[in-house]
Length: 144
Length: 144
DNA sequence: GTCTATATTGACAATCGTTCTCAACAATCC
DNA sequence: GGATTGTTGAGAACGATTGTCAATATAGAC
Image 1 (tube, rainbow over the protein chains, first blue to last red):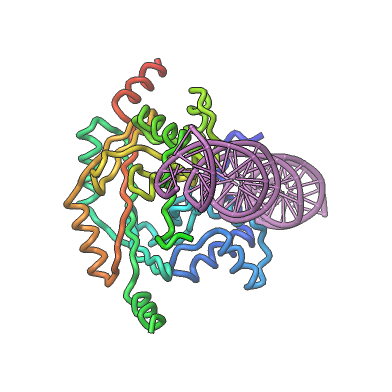
Image 2: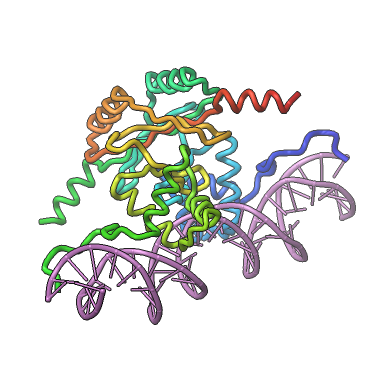
């Protein structure tokens, strides 16, 4: 019987978990779990969908990846700068291009707002969505 | 055959739609569609779940209510200050207490960030979650 | 008020992303 | 090698949301 505390998920290194981490390294933008599962299949990696979800959740809990919930409730995942700490995202609606943004001033503002209203343990979400230059150009080309 | 353009949903005023709007007036915080449906039933109003969803979507499209998507993908709805324009929320994780916040400086910042990176048609989401004073007090009382 | 056109409703099926179940499996430690 | 136990996979289950379509109610014309 173990005297140590219960181990967190992600203790063992397995082929599947390595594969999920690897495929996340290949893309720069946010992808859904289903997308990532498809990518793994195409690469010939045989990983169950449930395992993809479990691995992603474990990585998110460990702070190794970012999660972004879309307006229709789907969760998107993306690796983030190791140890980059808290940051936000500028995401292209067309191609998914994602740019990480730091905004210390906004952090301070959010913190102040919370304190001013008597709130403690404050966290916040902040993401900007738009259309990047490339996608604007493409749309213009297609409209022709 | 009508020569006019297709009418938007929400053209007619019905008992059901009035009921959904009324129940939204009774609460100050964000509620799920399922919650609101339950509240209607308890009040004796017989409104189908699908109709609740349709009404909420119509109101959201008209800009009469706010939508907030939780981390687990559920959509929450709340009436918002009529014509208050764009604003953000400070939400209590414990009781759901919601405070509307305006932050012109943040609006400008977000807009600038988007433009600087060549993004157009930018929108953003920004919400702060924390624990309000009342909930902190309650937790402290229970821990005793 | 009556009539008509049609927007709206409701019950239920269908969809979709995500989580659960549990027997089979494999990583780690001895 | 063998035991222990975290992990996996297939499919079922789940929950929120949307689609379907006949029945109904509303707004405006008469």
